[in-house]
Length: 232
Image (tube, rainbow, N blue to C red; front, side):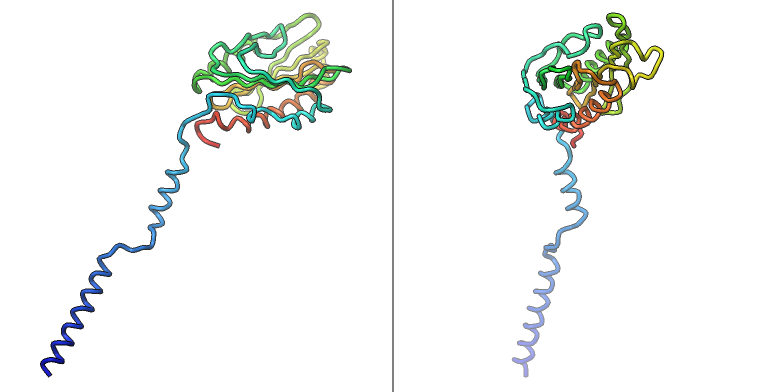
């Protein structure tokens, strides 16, 4: 009987020790709160932005079919003058660390040439300053060679969006700007990049050109995600 009791007591102690050990070991089930925090931290933006203008951030050839049949595409790099009407010239972004210019179309048969330029600045503050410089130039540009008339207006695309309408014959001085013969160019910013999208020349109305350019500017702005430190 004594031997049986000792054996039973030993078994009970062994079971108790096992239960204590199991209770002391950490649970294998992940903490949902901690896991969520880890995922949030890993997906937070790093704050780094692109410093070069890769071909991938430019509007594709297919995007320009909104203007008309695809024409020859010319693409170049390096800081050059912003493609604005002569009377509204703003020169080149002298503080740009990189810049890419694309033009598409021949301009034949009174067709417009599509133009896109993207300049990347050292940081967002420098890009804001460049966009402000362009805004000031376009805001001060009201008269060209008579009878040409220029009208600047806010553009709801990206940050610091601004549109410039060119009224070839000055009809908007006494009539509708949308119905005037002319063209349109848009300037906007995302992060440390400033972008220009416009139609150079062509025979059409300002209203039609604005619709086309605004749509292309929105598409172009979405491609500028690598320059946005807040993420996409």
